[in-house]
Image (cartoon, rainbow, N blue to C red; front, side, top):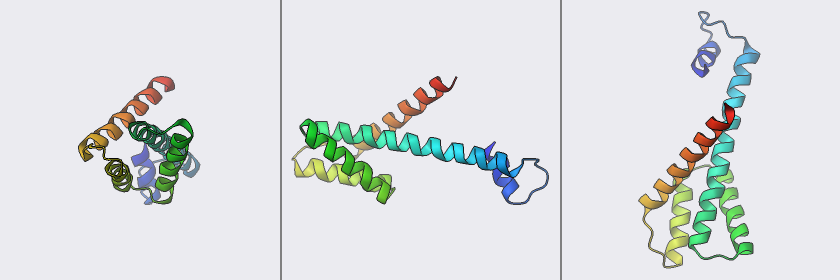
Length: 119
C-alpha cells in the first residue's frame, strides 16, 4: 500500500493511486507511528522512574521530561543513554541491553494491542 504511494510520488504511471488517497494513507501511517512511539516513551519513562523510586509527583515530572526530550531530539539511542545515566546516578545497575529489550517489548505490545483493537 505505502510502496504504491511512494512509487506514485516518483511519477511511475503503472500505479493508479490518486494523490489524496496516497496522502491519506501516508498520514495515517505517520500518525500511527507517532502514537506508538509516544505511548512507548511514556511507558518506558514510567518504568524507569519506578525503578528509580520516584514518588508520584516526581514520577510525573520525570515522565514528562523524558517524553519532551524525545520530542525535541527523536532518537532512541539518546533516550536509552539518558535512562542509563539516570540509573547510574542513582547507583542502579541495569544494562543497556535490559533497557533496549524493555523498549522493544513495550513497542511490540503496543503494536499488538493496536492490531487487535483495529479488527
